[in-house]
Image 1: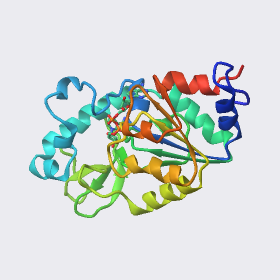
Image 2: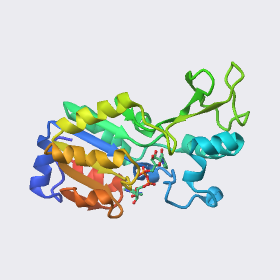
Image 3: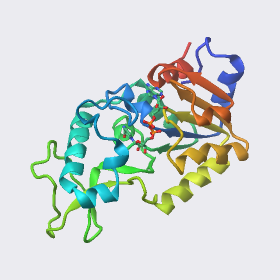
Image 4: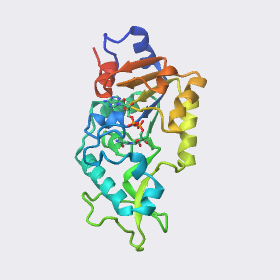
Length: 246
Ligand code: NAD
């Protein structure tokens, strides 16, 4: 990671190389090249359901079995997935920059699998479950689940320990993210549609604090309007090109 590829503009290379405090925000797009569908992509078996109809507390209350069948299907896909070059470069960035924060909206655990140590999993982790009676959390990594819906040892149902539509995020994680965003000099926003709040507003916080923003996405998003530079293409190709040594 010492030198950047010559195909990247020199001023961008210097900015990336000389940054002191870097924040990376990722969304479902970073994991798309690992074979994990984004919410807005084709969902095969589940294409008749929208995520907004299944990833909610009301859906779980009404039909926990249906919600868990959907999660069991997603967990099955994710269990087979490996980190792609985008995840791997981000893990290397953690080593390269003295001050580095990764905020992911993903619940798939692939950043950790790629070697990232400090990840703010702001929407939770789909390998962790939470007892709906006691609130205790634990990892349940069995694929496929032998019992749907699964239960806690106390007999109550467990739910995925993820943040569903209509639920609040952990305030401690929000504060930690905000602190990093107000002090960073470089922000990467990668593979997110920029419409799920509050993360959709995070780039504005960094912008107001003077950070340079690099967006990487296949298509324009609301974040493109405030990004200093928007790189169009796959994160698994663009990130290695940005950090390629000559
Ligand atoms: P999203 O599905 O709304 O948007 C995905 C974005 O990624 C799009 O803008 C798309 O253009 C872009 N994209 C797709 N492939 C890409 C690639 N190869 N390189 C770069 N960009 C690419 O996802 P979101 O913004 O993360 O928000 C939706 C919510 O869905 C989040 O809360 C997230 O937790 C959840 N989700 C997570 C996973 C996961 O954990 N892997 C998967 C699906 C959804």
